[in-house]
Length: 226
Image (tube, rainbow, N blue to C red; front, side, top):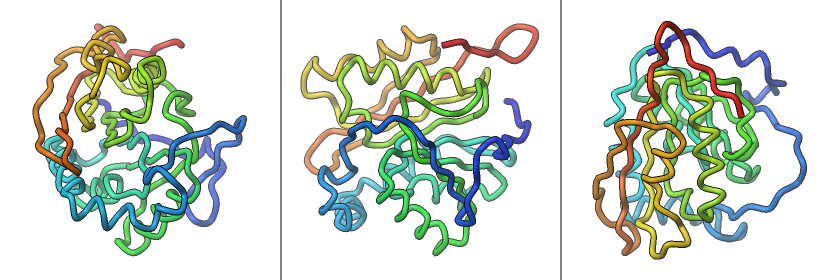
């Protein structure tokens, strides 16, 4: 796996260690569904066991020193902070469109005394070069998107993962075909070794853990174009 350092100099860094992506205003669904409910998000997800499954997802990835890690839809930063805690020598980046959630992420990282780079942006328009990461995570986010938006996001995640890179994802089992077949999306984009596992219940919903790999390009690093 490529362990070349991810240069963060291409972003405009603030004194808080976060960077803001200036883009056309878009709507999004906040982590807690509504802005006013955001203060309840962390205690509620802890109570219902969602954070435990996030920790298991990170531990299952077996991060190593030098790994470049991206958390797509990082929300309030629970997974990104935990990834940095269990592998301090990894480079961890989180991205989310919600500035309020990112503010909580920054406070959480500061309290944990870990360095996590945080960007404001959307998962289907990732502002990173191709093959920039070794691992990509996402937790409890894709169910907010329809099948078309899911496919766009997966395409961007595939683009920014290096050859041999891994995607680790947990989300609620789709209730209908509107959400699409996530495993089929992963394979259609080009991921290999796609696997699913029942991860248990959160908030009375079944949670599925997905994992997939980016193929290694023969003779060198892969780079995607889209």
